[in-house]
Length: 384
Image (cartoon, rainbow, N blue to C red):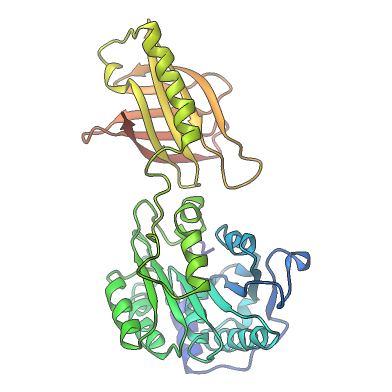
């Protein structure tokens, strides 16, 4: 994933790459299994081969960055998952796209029935360029494509993240293309969604362009659990076949309504509160009931505010299972207070929860790690 100071001089590097560069050194641009050799099924058994390409940094080696969570959906669906690791010394658009196209051809020659390229930022650019150099690439999925710097550090060149993208899309030979553009991406000049659709449609290429999906913001949005929850299934489906009018919506409904498990756990609190009778001061009354939302890490969350006893507010905090096995479903009893209109839970030794009513009737929610090492923010809505 891209870091804060990426692409500060990347406009120059990428431009040189477009003009042509030395042949890549094989030791510096390497295709490797994303989850180890043991994860590979082989060309005869796998549903296909997918290659993820990381971004590019001017101050560190992005080959050390983790494979994004959504790539596990390919592995779980029976694909062989690879990644293209590139050392900065040879990582130009020209070098890396040429090497990637060669690796894609090699995978098809091994007998893989499908070959898909996925990439983040600079990795998205080289994946698209590789699809302009090979007819054996079935699909490309690009997230937050960028190769010419960001607004704050490369203002003179960052608009080329749009202008250089159009000829690349027009050169794609026959691959179907899926692109993601995110709100609040400092590398995105804006307005790329419709021109991208138009460029791909003119080529007659099946495509899906997801432009500024709700709640996913910033250059690294594709690396979040929320992105996995909402789009991983759609991405795998796109890699396996061209989109069809009968396909379910790509933007999955996850997080819009509580799951059955979460709803059952949270409403159990509400029911017990109603049975015992609710004692609430005027400041607490607007918070009573069940509130629901989701965090950017891909976990559902509910707050079921039951009652007040004197100055103490009693509630259940319910957290859905996370993306990893060590993130189980949780339900904990919390005791808090109202302070200056804000509902606060800060019991000793526990993570801090803070809630404040918004003018639209929802509540702004903040989770703070008890050791001060993490912070999550979201917006919860009332569930009737």
